[in-house]
Image (cartoon, rainbow, N blue to C red):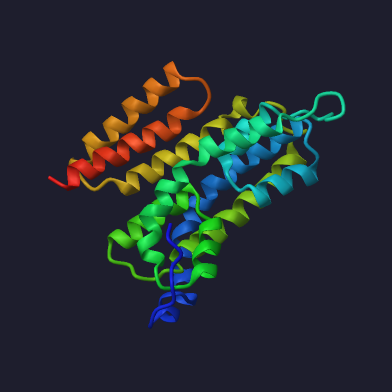
Length: 242
């Protein structure tokens, strides 16, 4: 995203009202985020992470999909089995490359508020916040601080749930037994329902889904996430240029 430059009227677009609207919009979604944040905290404890390590990862990385994948490579004893740092970094890059697409989509709505506010808001950009912000701006919303409002609420829910899940991990040794592992999927299905704008979206979603499933079957790692996002974006571009 090109660094936004200051412009007249920017302070009015970035203020408490946008934060309030974003926070209110994200409150229901935050419940779903907290649910799979609890699962992550539990699994992090089972993988050998300390409470401080799990909390630090959620606070600094703040990327659920990457964090779940990282658990598969985590070693509680780095002296015996060193962490594959390069592999972890590459994995995080691949899984989160979709944020480039999301940032480019929201970039025009953050223009004129200054680099610090724009990039500070982008730190809190996650799939749920992007879906809420995209829907808000599609309805004509003009508050640039809306994204930050959603992000702060989701961030607090994710971090708090991580810590609580880690602490409670000993009480629930198998989260899948209680269906808690489905919380991540359920939250995204709810977001998709909110983004549906009519039958014109069906073809775009189908293209993204087919490419993602094919990529998951044919390619190693998490490349299918990026490929599905790119395919959906290109399909959307072609559809809207007709």
